[in-house]
Image 1 (cartoon, helix red, strand yellow):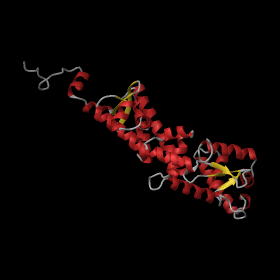
Image 2 (cartoon, rainbow, N blue to C red):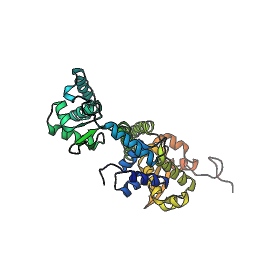
Image 3 (tube, rainbow, N blue to C red):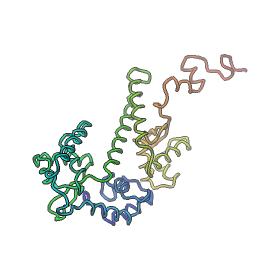
Image 4 (spheres, rainbow, N blue to C red):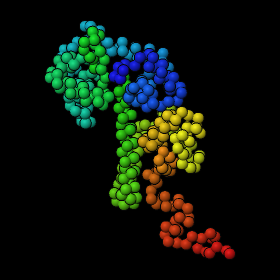
Length: 327
């Protein structure tokens, strides 16, 4: 059921569907899970890039056992040394400086520095010396950002909160996606305000900056990234607009895989590099060079000679430039 942990049978299905070439979004739909749950599962539990159900089950089980608290092994947060409490406050202040709410920062650092790797709400209240409502609000914020997770306590009557092993990877990917969206929005702004206008120039510089950050942070990894590049290569090779069905048939893929690859190529300019996927019509796609890679002057210099002369009001000639064609 959604929200519960993946079972061994769920992992067998994920492994089989990945082997069939299905994307994370389609697998999530079939299991009734968010796409992020599937991508996180594969990222955390794959073995050297290959996802196998039995290996993933062992790794996930071992991780859950490591998070179980050993009775009496860890003092309550309130019983920590003054140095430890001071560190939590200083570190939380640094995180708050990045935009994370102060209370959410304190809860997050408290979880990161716990020996068992997880704490109950009561332990957080006691350790941070705040109200239960403050902890509850902070946990809700952190869960919405996918920075913490929850699991039943050993007795099953309470829940324990923990920071997942892959939280840094997920935060990195979230930042990468946000930078790519800003770059794409800036590119659209250039089209609206006009290339060469003051606003267009500022947006172009802004888009180029965020695109470079996204490319440096993200790169192209995994099956989804490779599939996105493959559909771009297919569109370039075809030299004409193609539908999802055309691409699926030509590549020998299920339709869902081709659709997922197009979706990534359309919404992740950091993946597509110098090419931009565009819609040529309803359900039809084509590619074109990314305009933010070249300045207006560079694009003008690279246009065919006839296009340049036409743009400047000059004659279009078939022979030597400046002469009439031989009759």
